[in-house]
Structures are given as structure tokens and as C-alpha cells.
Image 1: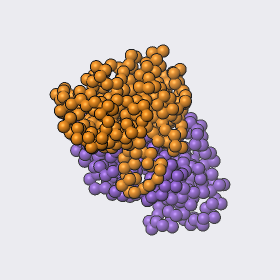
Image 2: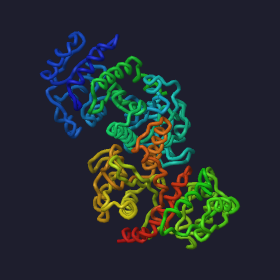
Image 3: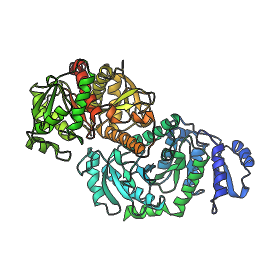
Image 4: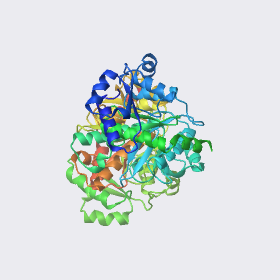
Length: 306
Length: 306
């Protein structure tokens, strides 16, 4: 029920997912049955491929996340996290209220043992057609150096297993190249990253390096990361509005990537953009499936505790 | 002597400045006389329009700023700051070692009374053809809320007098719209900005708002600002390399803006990009002249002490 085009684009995305995926998962739709049922008929989804869990309430985009989750126990987000926590579903995806999705992930699920704080990331389209990962992008606006060090581990596991990058290079967002540069956080995080044997640390990465091929995983506090993410999104939108066309710019279209997983909680949670359309929903389901098939949670735990 | 194309592009810039400016200032060239003299003849600059101060040494781009300034007392940057401090010149411009220019400005000059820390800014090309100002962009990587509040005042004086923006709107870089959002710095800066009677505060500005017309002056810590600046510069370079052409993208070309002044010191210091060409040098001289004609230092002091 989440997002600007709910529920029709979600159902179109499921249709595309089922049609295109050989080993498709069983899809559980959580939402208002009255609104969903006619769409299911319209798109002729095979009844064996899905289950519907009725959720009569919706958390709107502008509601206060914690308050809404507490009061709307029959919302699709609240019921979804209940189903995930009780293992009725294996992964939970929504393009609904981002704050409510984050609060739900943090308070309904356990964090993976050893994780200081879960994190959210974004895909970075690089100049040379490669794909990088930037994290944190807003869940942790003030960070300790140890958190950046964990983001590096979680980002590396994700880049290797989901993005297919062998031995991903980790960079630290900073305002200079040499060790010792930067704000207090970057100065303190650098030696931790340098000593970290679980990652392939390549040093500082400046603003000018983010979109070129200097690193595969770039770590920063969530304040800096969120500014970078939203800046990049808005530049894509500006080029669209000004009708500046190029395949490189198209790669800034978030819909190609689907959504962002919450890394560090013990079950796959994927948060989509409010304006997600069918392609984004399809890609989010594929991402959840890949995270389960690759056993990401287990791999994260192994790297974090060893 | 600073920059990748020194000294020829500097002298070409002076030639253009003198040719195009009715009330041109007297230009003092500080550098290696042997290298400068033949270029002055070549460009047939009128001898009444300039003076040369011989500086036999050069601080290279990769030298350690403090060390180089201390050891190379006969460098163009060291001699330039000496001339500025002793009022032999009224403004100092260089495209040389940025760190040495900053160290020179901070230690050779006085700060304006009441200024906690000087700051550097960048011009922001907005989607609607307007021009905004972002500060700090790297001089102060960790900031106190009171510093952001002063950046807002200094940026407003600059925007009004130099950029010609009446009653400039001030925004605070943040990761949410409402008061109370953000990291600890943004949370603490917001109420100071709201109460500040010297500025026209319009609230938080997210990453997606930077390049649209939400604010004329945007304040942030120098870590965040530097990442934004270098990211924007690199995206311009990427579009150039990929031959993506559009007049909006051309406005991301730093050369249109010349250089950045160090705001908060008691005399005009303008720092150019290392790859400055003649147009950038011309624009930096014009900027210095405007800062003097508009009496920016006096206006900054008046706003900061009242």
C-alpha cells in the first residue's frame, strides 16, 4: 500500500517478476484486500503464486513514523513487520513511509550479533559503467568511528555478494587524500579502516572521486551520505526537466536499482522510493530473493564476529 | 606564479581585465621577473597600468602549506601576504597552493572583530538561472553551531553586495525539512539561525534543494560543503568527458566565477582554482575590485558586531 502509485504499480511489478523469473518466490501481498483483489484479477496473476494478508490501514507519507506504527497496528507496514518477525515471510519490501520502515526494522527485528547500528546504503553509478555502494545514507546522522568501520564490512559483504564485485575496494569519504586529513570522525576512522583485516581499504575518497572508479564501497556518516544521495537524485531530476539526455544520466534513475536494504538487521528489509513504479518493485523482489539465496545475513554475521 | 598555467594565463587575464574595465585598478604582479617580463612585452600591457614585485621562489601545489610558507619567504605567496598586511596592495589573488593561501590568510592577516573563524564559499548555479552561495566549503571541517550562524551573516552580506541578491534567504543544510532533524550540529544551529535578526532564515535545505531555488545562502560545516563542491565539480568534468552538452551544465564550470574569497579576514584574499585560465584570473580581479568598492569588510564588521 506504500508509495505514490500503490497498490497498482506494486502489483504490476509482481506480475513482471513472476513472468520473468524462473525460480520465482511465493509472493505475500499485505494490504487492503478490497483494493488489491480486482487488480489481481485484472493482471491475471496465478493464484498459486501469491497469498494476500489483509491490512485495512495505511501509514501515510507524512505521518510521524513511531507514532503511526504504534497507533496503526493494522497498517500494511505494522502487519508486514509482524509477519517478518514471526517468520511468516522471509523478506519484507515496501515503498511506503521510509521513517516507519526504518523504525519498524530497528524495533521489530533483532540486529545481527555484534552490529552497533544497522545502516542503509545507495548504489552509485560510476563513470566507467561500474557500480559502487555508498553508506550510510541517512539512518545514522552522527556516527562513531567504529560504526564507519562496520559499515565498511557490511558494505563489502553486500558489494561482493549482491553487486558481484570481487575484493571490493573500500574508501573513506574525506576532504583530502592523506591520512590525518578531515574532520574528527574521518581522522579517527582512518586508522581503524587501515587496520581492518576484513576489508580492502584504499584510503580517502574525496567528493570528486565518488562517481569515478576509485572505490567500490564508500563509507561516511549518514548526514554526509544523505546529502550526497539527495543531491545526485536532484541532479538527475534537473537534467530530466531540462531534457538533457544521456545514457550515463539515466543510470542516476533510482528505479533501475529498486530500493535499499537495511543492513545489520537479521532479516531482509528493503525500502523503496515513494515514487517507485513497477520496475522498481520487480527489482526489489529480485534483490530480496538474491539476499536470501546468497545467505547475506549469515555472511554478515560471520564477518562481523570473526 | 600559481596554478597550472602560470604565469602566462594570469597575464592574459590581466590584459583582458585592463582592456575591458573602464575604471581598472592598478595591478601589482608578484612573481619571477625573468619569466614575467617577456610576457608583459608580448601582451603589450601599458607600463602605467602595472607594477612588478620580484619573487624568486614558488610554492608548488604539493608542498606542505605551513612548512612551505615558513621556509620560502621569497615565494610569490609569502611576499603577496606581506604586501597585503603592510598595505602595499589592497587585495591579494592567487591560483597557487590553496593550503598556503589559506594559511597565509589566517596567519598574516587579522580576522574581522567578532569573527570566530574565517570561511570560504562557493557559487551554486541554480536550476532557474539564479546563483546561490554555499559555505563553508572546506576551511572548517568541524564546526560549532555559532560558526554556522556567523557563516549565515557573512554569506548574506556577500550575496547582497556581490551577487546582488536582495534580502538573501538563508538555508541550513540538513537531512530533513523540520526543525529538530539532522545531526547534533544541525539540531543546535537551527534555533540560532531562527533567532538571528541579521539574516532571513528560511529553514532546512536538503541535498535535493541545493541546486533549486530554495535559498540564496546555504550554510554547513566545511566537511559537508567540501564534499558537495568537489562532487559538483566532478560531475561537470564527467559530463565534459562524456560530451554531454547543455548551457545549464556550463554553469558548473568554475572558471565563470573566478575564485573564492576568504570571508572573515580584514582584507580581500581570493583563491583561484589550480587550473584557472585567463577568464578566471580576470574574474578574480573584478571580484576583488568589487569587494573593495562595496566596502565588504566594513559591512561584514557592522553586521557581526551589532
